[in-house]
Image (cartoon, rainbow, N blue to C red; front, side, top):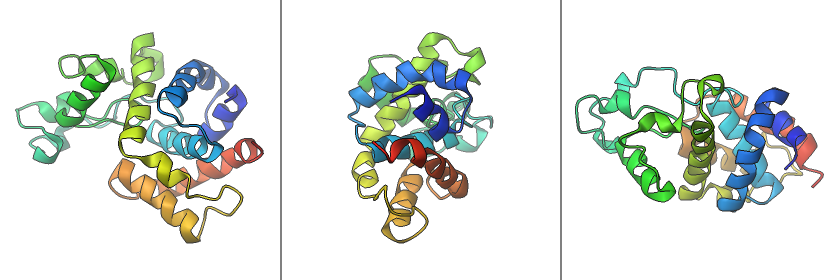
Length: 196
């Protein structure tokens, strides 16, 4: 992947793309995100979730996740402590525990290691883990398999292409929030990924 591919597909600045390029290269190797359509779908989704590779922490307080047993938030304060962080917004005690085991880092006792508000307030470790956590979530939810069902040479707006893109969105978001923006980012990236 080139810096131009990252910049165009993520709809981000050159500076943000430069920051994340080495981390995404590591993510793509580690989690076998290899094909152009996998990389394009990944970047469209992750860049939406992070506001163009800018935010590494959910803007909301996390209070809405308080007491959410489905997320493993069983102790008072868990909602805020384990709010969405990383480029794909890892949320909940359960996911932080699973990610800790996968990346051999203690995100349960040090949740801000996944992100610090935005990239200008992040340490290199926070940036690295923000990117790696997105790759881990993508891999754990088997999203490359769905992405590879999308025909990159056919319109994304209809048929099975759209259905598969919506399925990826639902697995990441729990619904279809921001679907139009995610589709826009995918379409922007087509020019730099469909020729591969």
